[in-house]
Length: 423
Image: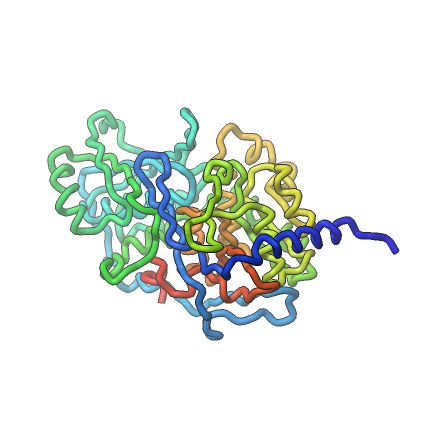
């Protein structure tokens, strides 16, 4: 009888992991990780939560599927439409800003800019988009649907595509705004500057990347809800590329009902983070390809499960994951060949970041191997789309585990900011 090399590798891996994990207690979710990141401001990067029992009413097992898949939940609807004003009121002053650092930041930046504009009674100018490298700039309409954004906000603020020629950026006051800015903060700290200067440029900074809601937050401003969940959409050509990639992943997933998993796993980020114990037995700050593979197998996902990775290009450290899940892909394997020159070979990485974000939002399961704002905003997007199956990885000491025990606490505890906007 022939020997299947992949089965041998999988068996060795599983035995090895059992030995490694045998002395560990079953850990809860990613727990209270506080980590400082480099950037414009210190970011509190955290996963938090504890092992919980998820009620049957929250998620149901999908019938006729192979593996621990769960159904979408379409019971939530936007809470904000009836709370918005009937018309936008704008002054002669303008608010400008830029989108930076990737789509997970764009959502917060557009939300804060809209909030500031609304409560100043100003006019918002569509932003440019700036990548991480000097000179890496693009127009808003290269990535997002400008007409959709203008239309969605027409009853709240006035939005123009360009700053009038007579208004100079050099004369604008630059105002730093904390993310999740409030009406009171704007009135106290920004309004006096706006009245004095007439035009301002907003720069959002992130004291924390935590998107949990709390009793101290009070009611979420409906304008913020609209901006966060109802304004940004991909421009049609880029959206078509994302849809074609999602469809190709579903085609590979016929045996599991067209379902696939998206895993936010980027080798360069893992190398920089140096995944380590948090001090809690069995708890780690992040997870590599081997650990993700074992986690998914112990949850019962079959070897023919299709997996999408946010990793830009294939790396040899991912081979162990592909040995266990042969249908594991990165962008270059599933993007239409005719689109690669524009979206994969561009000097800008912005296209790739956006593609990762929206595929991760639309997958049947999302697994964050890395903490941060990408994870937090993907969860928010998925709550809005009715896709609550976000599984936070953990080291499972038993031979198997229940997927419902590893649902993100953002969802199992319903403490994500999105739950203030959907009801």
